[in-house]
Image (cartoon, rainbow, N blue to C red; front, side):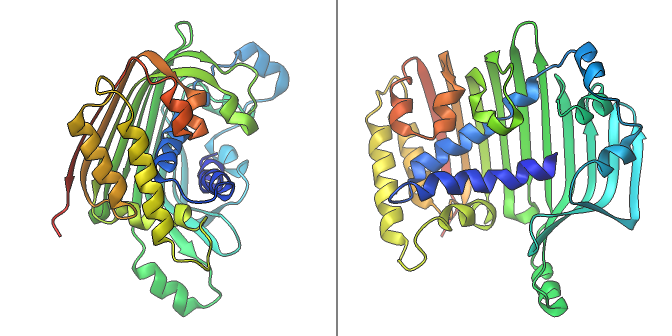
Length: 327
């Protein structure tokens, strides 16, 4: 499950950018918010009676892992059923023939996990922890693979969500930590969900609103190492990317500057402008907070279109702070 989700995120970023004449950093930023908002499909709570008609629950956590394509175990792998879910250590999966990933430990806690997972459903709450996630290149040269692995940084991820299906509300917390490279944390409160009859292959069709969003980035090379490469790789390979990046940065800042001060005060605009201009190396400490009285539609966020977002921004308050790293 997690492997598939991680595989699709770079592809989503790339597909959008290939249809644009140049990289828009502002659009990429809003796209990131949209991808985070796509955690909403995790909020579906299927009818257990309905699931019973479609599938038989998995026997245990070993069967759950065995049902995930491309996941590999070793002689050191430990898989155990724990209270509320599953825990496993020393796993890997194949992104492609060239890239594999390795995980030191994974813990997934969720109600009725063995039943909902087998049915391709996700329950109303879950807590996922990944520790020691690393990229393992497959160059064909054992020496090169070893040399590259020396600079590989272990990443810890934590995603937790809770929902109230009756009220159609939910809360999500996400944190990514990469040691000395830095840390990214995201949280959101959502309401008005309508993700019924939405297949997992069409997550952007999920309906709902984002009422509150917070982001915090402590960057010491994190963004340049993990997030910038898939964005930059969509630019023409035979051209200097800097002019296109600079033009897109100024276009995004101009768009943000056109929003009223009731939406974004000058100090917040200045912080966001500094963050955008720092791409692809926004080293320093940054925060972003969004509160929307009417709520921002997940559809407008996932589109990654700043112009479309401008039309629904009324009643929204954006606060940002930034402390760039010393030169």
